[in-house]
Image: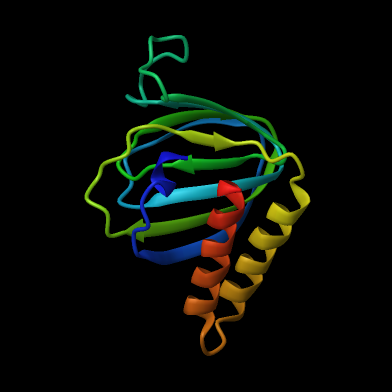
Length: 151
């Protein structure tokens, strides 16, 4: 994943557990990055103008098909349309201090998704408890996750 090429400082904004029914939805540009893990799901992401038809031409990296067990990076500032079935996922919203602007989805399909599911669940539980030190502990888990992706 290109956003891992540098080691920017990272600030976690939220860790969410999401469940939703099948839908087609557009998302305008957001001021943060997102890294998600699908516990269950099948979603197609079409980057660019959220009003564009799904079969409209796209730049390289402006399409991703995330399945159960996949980790997906969505950069800040990227509008996209998502077509998905019933889904259950964890997502981490975060900021970095990097000056580079990422303009593409990045999909990681782990050989064994179980350790990634465990890390995302632990990040979520840590974030939700909000006990003293939860933010640096969640950031530490997030950095461990990034290290696992690079292996």
